[in-house]
Length: 239
Image (tube, rainbow, N blue to C red):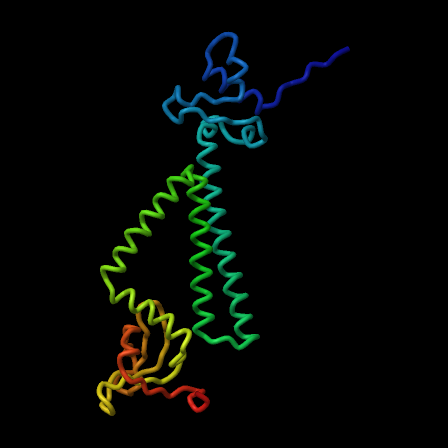
């Protein structure tokens, strides 16, 4: 004696949904047996939904939005993964810098470079999930690079500051947390302060006088190769 098998609620809802999309008495053709015709209701062109446990859990109205929900969850996971990887890399760079006594400017540069690379990779992954082709992306990047190159050559001072930054990091006339002073002419006093940051465009000095304790100076990096520098560093005696 054979016993009839009662269909599950998920299969019943799926059959009802397919019947609403394909009102034919014979049902949908075999080629469309797993396709939700959301275009008939003005939602999406055609969303391919395979019979998975997720389709049985979600309500009927959420089935056309399953692809959008999945895409949103993927983007959120990419952001969370990029943030976690950034924190891990920053901690690793800090430990390497403490173990091998690396200069502070090298550690800061490595942190900034790793952050840029991680978030750039995350942006590329998000654009790939959104359906942006590699050809379109490469065309946009090359166009942006060409415009940036023209802008850099138009503003020669910016390019000069970037080149002087590389010289400061390699020649190292001063380091982070050194006390320096830019002399105007000979012994005439000029800009003076403690180096607290070095980036691609300028160097930030914190003034050490009692009257201007909270004031910082942002000096263009090209200016350090046009003036005489007086330095009071921790290792100034060994230079």
